[in-house]
Image (tube, rainbow, N blue to C red; front, side, top):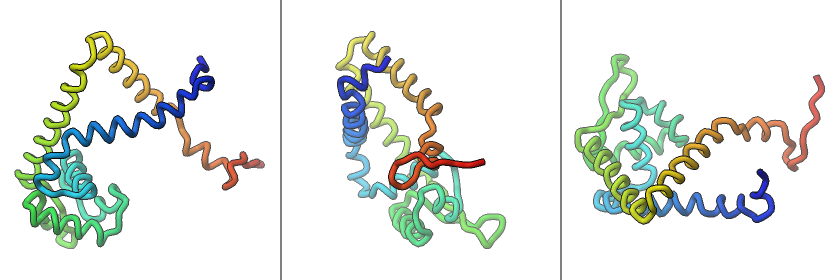
Length: 166
């Protein structure tokens, strides 16, 4: 099944996927705007919601930002009452955790995302919704099987395959 090569489907999908994600996120942007959070702040709050309290070092690695940047993000989120710092058992470390307001914010944001998605799905008939679900799950499964990193490691900077001698 190589129809994607003939009709430029890959290019169309590559163009549409980020647009769909951007618009889905945009539908629930009101809650972020009401609190005035930046994208980086949202990422930090969402990370804490998924993973629980974390050290600044862990947040630095997970969010791929400088430690000073993470500290500044935490300062601003503390001012907004969404996170707090507390000493770990090893008092040399500081942990960052969500406050109840932070947990409520993430739950409200998640609910807004779901509400927006329900409104979008209402525009599709039941069988089309099931087909969308099926194809999204297939794509997700396939992403686990594709390893571009390994392919990129075996290429030169000019995109030519590297010759490896063993």
